[in-house]
Image 1 (cartoon, one colour):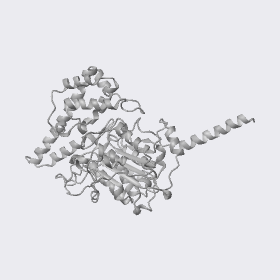
Image 2 (image 1 turned 180 degrees about the vertical axis):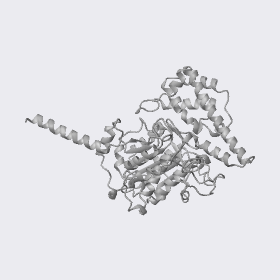
Image 3 (image 1 turned 60 degrees about the vertical axis):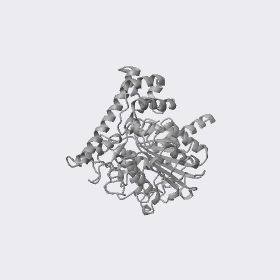
Image 4 (image 1 turned 30 degrees about the horizontal axis):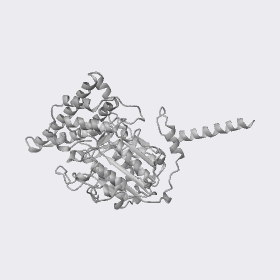
Length: 492
C-alpha cells in the first residue's frame, strides 16, 4: 500500500474515533447536531479541583421588588446559603436585592424567607450589599468590573478578581426578549451586558466565569451575542422566545404553606439549587447539573421551558466545586444521575408573568368578605389587568398603524433564526422603547414581553419619527396606575 493511501486510512480512523467520542458525550436530541459545541466540550481540559488556584467570587442579583415577586429574593438568599456552606467567604459574595420582602406586611413569617414549602429560613445572615434604589444596572456593572469609583451607594463591595480567579454570576428576575428587569430603571439590555462581559475578559481579571440566568426569554440575552472564546459559560432558564416559570405557587402542587399567597421559587432556579444542596460538588460537573436542570425545568405537559447553554460550552466539564465550593456534609454523596431530582418535580408551575395575578387572586380569595384586605386585593387585580390590556392594545395598534392591519401582527411576532441576536441596532431598540413609554406609559415587568415587537420595528427600518407619530395616535394619555412610568420611571 503506497504512502498516500496509508495517510488517508489513518485520517479516516482518527476522524471516526473523534466522531464516536463526540457521539458518546453528546446529550442532545437526535435531530439536533451541534458538533462545534460538542467538540469544545470534548477537547476542553477540565480543571483539577485539587489544583484550583485563585479566589472564588460571586454576584447574586434579584432584579425585582414587591411581595408578589417574593420568589426572586428567595432564590438569591438560597443561593447565598449554598455558597457560604460551600466555603466562599462573605467578602467575596456580592448580593443585590431590594430587600422589601422579609419584613413586608404580607409576609406571614416576618424576618424569614423560605424557598420551598418545607424549607427553612434562607434570609438569615445574607449581607445587604446593594438594596433599594442601589439595585440598578450601573452598580451591577461596576461591581462585576471591579470599578469602585463607578458605584453609587451600597456596601462598596466589587469583584476585585485576578487572572487565576473564578466568578459565578446568578441573576433572577422578570425578562423579555433582549432585556432583564431591575427594580429601579433603566432595565438591563443584552447588548450592554455582553459588552461588559467582553470588557471584563479584556481586563484579564478572571480565569473562568459562569453565568446562571433566570428570566423569561433569557436565551435572548446571549443568543448571537456571547462569544465562545472569552472563558464564559452561561445557562438560561428558557430559550430566546419562551417564558420561564415560577414554582411552589398557591393552587399548585406542592403548594406553599397555606398562609403564603405567593410563589416561593422559580423552576429553573430551584432545580439547580436543590441539586447543589444534596450533592458533593467536587464530583458533579457543570454539564451534569445542566442536564438535571434541563430535565426538571421541561418536566411538564402544560408548562416548562428549554434550558439553554451559551458561550464556552467546554467549561461545563469543570466541577461545580470550582465556582460554588461544596458543603462538607455532602462529602460522601457522589453524583449518580438526574433521577433523584427529576422525581421531585412539581406537578405544575406558573408562568412568570402571571405570578403577580396568582398572588392578588389568592389574597382576594382568602380575605374575609367586606374586609379592607379583600377590597385592596380586588383593586390590585383590576389594576393589573387594566395595565395589561392597555399595554397589549397599545402595542397592537402601533403595529397596525405602522405596517397595516394584517401585516402588523405578523411582523411583530416574527422570531429570528437561532444564532442571530434579537436586533441589529440596540440603540434603536432603546429609542423605540423610550418613545413608546413617553406616549403610552411604562412597559413594566409584564410589558417586557413586547420587546420583540420593538426590535422588529427597528429591523424593519422604521424611523423614530414614524414611531412617535404612531405612539401618539395609539395613546391619548398615560394611565396613572402603579405600573405607570409616572411612578416607576422609564425602561430605557
